[in-house]
Amino acid sequence: MIKGVIFDLDGVIVSTDELHYQGWKYMADSEGIYFDRQINERLRGVSRMESLSIILEKASKTYTDAQKEALATLKNDYYKELLATTLSPADILPGVLNVLSGLKAAGIKIAIGSSSKNTPTILKQIGLDKTFDAVSDGNNITNSKPDPEVFLIAAEWLGLKPEDCLVVEDAEAGVTAAKAGGMKALAVGSAATDDRADLAAADLSLINVEQMINL
Image (cartoon, rainbow, N blue to C red; front, side, top):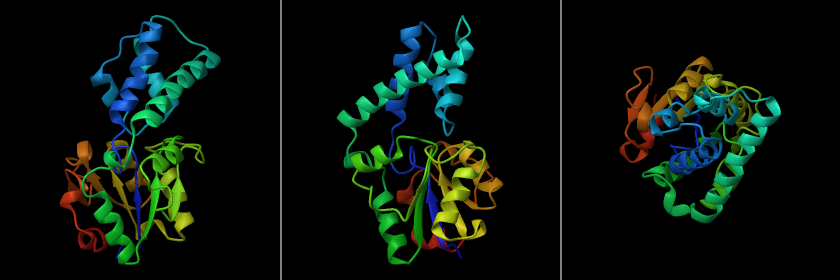
């Protein structure tokens, strides 16, 4: 029986995909680098610097580490502006609140496991900053997904063994990370077709708590 559920943030709890796309597009356009939504799909579940590396594959020049940091900061500053002005509790994805309240009622611990360094800001903007028992994110990890570090830390902070945890993910890199960490995986959104998942659905409105905890 599952004792803890670890949720990815972007694409699982709330959709910030469009804001990320706009942020990266703003950065790419400032440098004259080709960037489109197809390239953006490759950025799902990976860190900011790894995302930048993917975008720079289309660049006509090479960048120093300092220049890369500056580009990442440019994107993130614009993204944070968008978060502060457009993100609200209305952006919480279907089924999320029911699942969270159901898990709490069943005595199941819940955590966030996200590669994003903006996790605290996002959770506050959508009114869920005091909801989770643990938050592991890009601010406390060395290795991004598909490395399982962020989920393993979340499990540790919940006081649980990895095998007692279920990860909810919308990216294949996240499913890979969950499996590498010895955890079960519920795949939603674009990862719902991943046959490695123990459970899958288009979104959390199609999943009930009993299905999750009895895996």
